[in-house]
Image 1: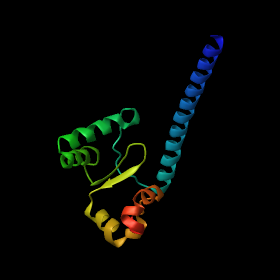
Image 2: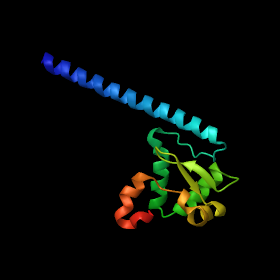
Image 3: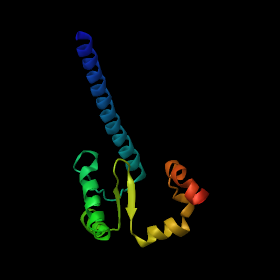
Image 4: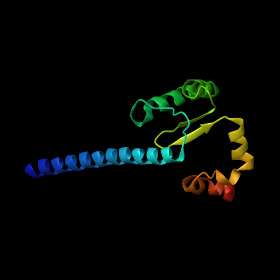
Length: 134
């Protein structure tokens, strides 16, 4: 019985330590990324999440998908978080730039297409489907 209690206690401590290290890593990573972005200049307005793991954003997106009102959600989100422009930062875990600004869309799809890569993870996931153009 003593061995079980001791093993259980060790496992609990290991899980707690891993969780603390994970939270510390995420926090320090956020500070590092924010500092690098500040050096580049202005940022788009940020769609903040107020619950852990962006649960409020996930809930909002799922609710609008189920109600088939995703377009309305985007209009509300831009009006609330970026009222003077059609570009904002959002994302669940990772930083994502969302834009409906016509000049940005033009740059992404036509004039500066090669400068807007989707990254190695997207490429790996969609290479079979999109080829090297993804």
